[in-house]
Image (cartoon, rainbow, N blue to C red; front, top):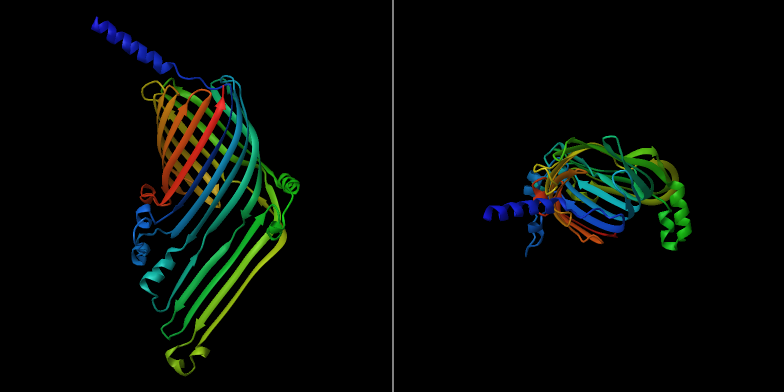
Length: 400
């Protein structure tokens, strides 16, 4: 009798594992995500009674990229139709915001150790920034043994920082002379002139300029089952450029500062003549047409279900990205999925040159689905576990 009850319990559990909540036929939803990080300061360094900044330790610990800062904000609005593996259709309107900057390591070495005679300290401040709106759709189907997804999108840049330059140079010579130089040239392109932004612009004018400046790119994926119920593999492409966006309204921030000092000891009688400085800055607007592309990626991913059902899965990925330079994304996500009702994910990713450690939760009540994700991140792998940056996202889906 006990054996019979045990067998029935096992069969019931096996049946439940396959009795998953099906996908909604029609759904609409929205999501928002925000993140920010740096490459050095963790939560423990900031939330203390007294904040201590050890320049010597910073100069030792910082990597070749120096002290970096990243900021991102994304929103999504979408409607999907799901009628089996051969017909999936969706439409979306999204925004993407990304910005990063860095202070060179040599600056902290100079501040910590003081200058060495007859040595020139130089460094570049790297700056990137983009704000995009995208509108598009996707179509998913099954062709033979391949599940494919096609996703063209119009992308419209609101703000784009185009090839900025910012640098400093500092030198002290053994003859007592000193030289310092700071230069910056930051071109900011926008869909409307920034100098007129405070005067108010009509919504129709903004929309017309957005449409006129828009570009077209393509995202897509293909996957196949390599070992049934065990391993699926796939390839994907994101933001493959087809037609570049165009911007012409440019606001240019330019600044220079130079300082030089002759031998101070040899000019004690007239110190003011021994020191000379010059500074100049401008904030101008003009037009110069440029082409704008979104970050492009191409890569591979897999879904491994070691127990032959979707209860537990491992999802590795490897991607090649191009955004100002060429870089590699790599990641691994572990997922516990209870009948598509409740799911927990843990992931570690090196994405867009930032390490991200994330926890995700999903609650699916069929007509309502909530997705929440929170994590710690940083350019530095060790600091990504120490709260040097935080990210969070929240998503809502409604349908039947």
